[in-house]
Image (tube, rainbow, N blue to C red; front, top):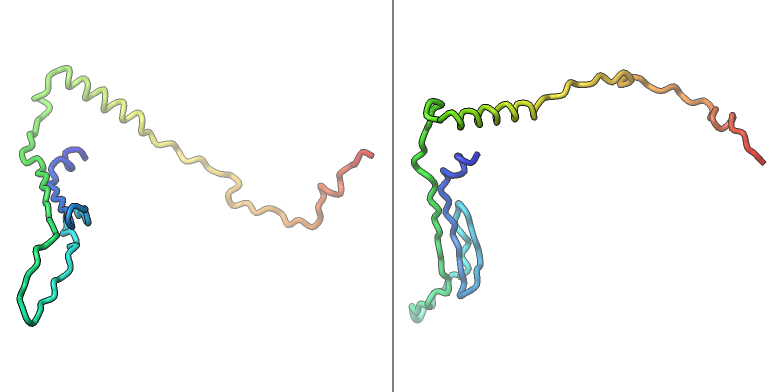
Length: 122
């Protein structure tokens, strides 16, 4: 998972309206805070936009080094072997236990026998 995540490239887009952060988007385009300026029939005056857009691009790792088991020294091989054995022993599946009364339906209660057989000390 670490190798897979380290190769991702991420783009983070931020939109500001004045000095306030309005929207942040990862992998997509952020929503604009400025409304469309209506065009006036008399003059084509344009206002300065209050929106500011920042794009941060985090580049992932491009070149990965593939090593074989022969490239490792003896200590690294022993640590790798010990780690593999310990992980193998941790994740041992437990056998399923048979439940003998799983399909047993209880008898129909006609009378409350435990109430009839009670004794009261007065």
